[in-house]
Image 1 (tube, rainbow, N blue to C red):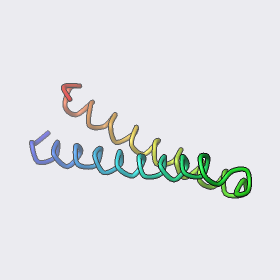
Image 2 (cartoon, rainbow, N blue to C red):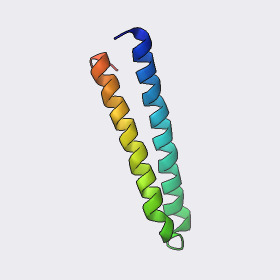
Image 3 (cartoon, rainbow, N blue to C red):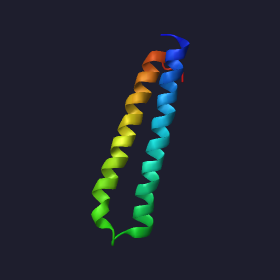
Amino acid sequence: MSDEELKKLEKDVKKNKRLANEAASVLHDLIEDRLPDAYGELMGIAQMTYDACKAWDEANKKFMAASGGNA
């Protein structure tokens, strides 16, 4: 795999990690500030957070496999 392809995979990992952190922040704010009143939003935000974390995990696994786990 070329250096450029590895850099793209690494960039995808960083982007997905940022998105996962943003989703986790939304979930945290809901839990800390708005529950129990906003309980109707919990499942949607939790699913969004799960999906973002899963996307990061998949991108990270691809990058680790391509880079030989040296990241």
